[in-house]
Image 1 (tube, helix red, strand yellow):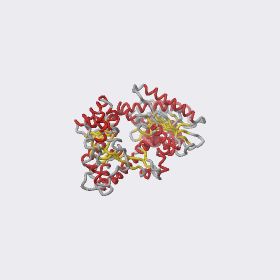
Image 2 (image 1 turned 30 degrees about the vertical axis):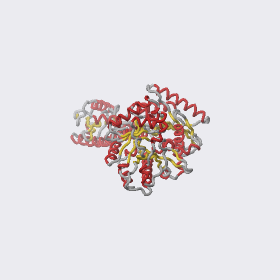
Image 3 (image 1 turned 180 degrees about the vertical axis):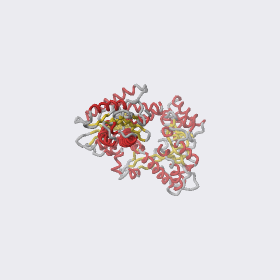
Image 4 (image 1 turned 60 degrees about the horizontal axis):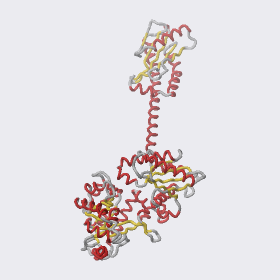
Length: 607
């Protein structure tokens, strides 16, 4: 049996078998009449197991003749190979057998028993062959239907698989964000069935990737997802809504908060136990935010924003804690968009640039300002990015926010009657990975610089070690290269806090490194504290990179950094970030200078 025949054999369903049996019933009388036959046998053995022989006889025929006909028909059906025809003209009855074939594919065979007195030789053969072709064509239609049924079943199976895969996060095999939101909205249609929307964030996950690598990070995520599946009730909805974030919708019984407290305590214990097998310290800690349906809202989007706000309240509280949303948290989350503006785009207008000076530690001159985003509330209060961190997780919001901050900063720097002949202070701009992954970002920045008549030589683009992670030659890398090719400079922020920092300083298009305050903070406390900073300074200088020390807050730190040969500093000692560092409305802005001797005078006296 060939491959096609084997496929069709598998295609016959019980329904197809019934259809063939109905076909035999319909054509039997026609075959008997047209062939002047006393008996007929249908053999569909090649394609339908168990349908090897079906004998039909003329009602009222002689029993002896019919018995003889049955014997000969069985003998005919037993032939191993179905010949074009099989004929014994000397028998009574004469038995003729033909293949039931269409397009060289044999569906079976047809045998008829014709009494000798009805036998007409070649005329009978021709008539029976025509009848066999008619039966074959009808049977082939059934086979086509069977094949279509098989194809349709395969297509349905593939569609089901595709639909399942389309809803599944490929790494953790829980629902992806889109599917989670759709199913969660469906769950929140009956206010009589309270549910809790629980947002999980893995504390310190970026450091896990930095220290142990992305492959281990993937194993960690899979372990967390598996733990959540096993720890929550079976009917809970679990989804991965961000790189290190999961969300769960679970039914809330009458006991409410006490039930949630016990459930989350078990979940935390299971996480700690399961990730312990990974053999790495300090894993399994999560920050949790919760919102309640329908008590706090009946709209999923609102509840998601509430849970997100509560989640970041947990992170601000020191992480590894749980917070249930309440109205006083609303100030710090995406749900505040509804109170402050009509849309996220309008909400961005409440983010304003602040600027912090970067100082030459040899001359005291202010060489530039780092542009920092601050949220200005309707009451006139300012909040740091930690309080609107949710905006940076949405690529559309993040990109719009970056462009908004850049344009407002350029407008602030260029306001007034500045002397066009004076040197422009450097503008240090923080960007996100979303910006650098956008091939149009550099061209958009070019347009903004042209609009305010600012040269590329006044622009420094700051990227963190986490942003810079990636392959040389990727879009991130190409964007940084293009910035430098146009005359801008690139600064690597928080240098020393990630495992890939040295590699990026050496291999990536970087001009400046900013030593994180984690290292500069204790630099004034003795030789041991200076060792790391001194080493980082030497590495950066040997590679031809300019160095800026962050977190300079005391005269002792300033003195220590000067002794180590650090070129530039930034920190509260020189001023906090301000809406507009005065004076910026005249040539003297270019000449702003700090009296470093006065700042370190007391240190010199005691040194």
